Image (cartoon, rainbow, N blue to C red; front, top):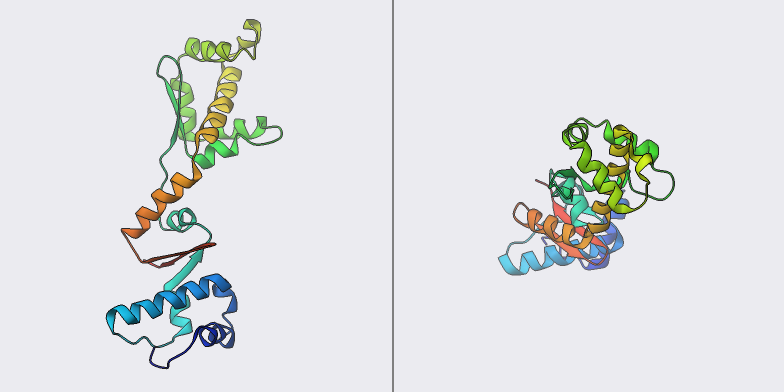
Length: 196
């Protein structure tokens, strides 16, 4: 850097500029190490510009969180009925209807989302009943109302998708997506990316 600074001085400069909260302690250390390595690899000196660094780099707890802010979309989870009808939900949608406590109102709200409602309306009534019978949770006479059956099936589908979700795999996909688009600095406790 044009004015040679050590790690402590680098971290202290953020405090001097009132930017202590821009990065965590670990994040500042990771950014310092990255910039030092960049200088070494390129032979180019970098001027310490705290405001510029805060504008150009952002810290996130996960690569997934960072990627989603820039438009990354996870693959939807798919629930299959025996007749190969499907219900597709994002993980956020599935989590909204599958959680501890009473889910009825949340399932109802999810069923009113336009693309979810269309999927439910396209399901075969008999296939829905059969799928619910297979769970063994309801007697035949309890399964006479189609709309109530759709709500039940949506709740089951959401739970299945949440159970199958692999957060580690989602983070790896997000990391790959980011690496194709920008600089990413991984460290214990999070990631720093250069904005794009």
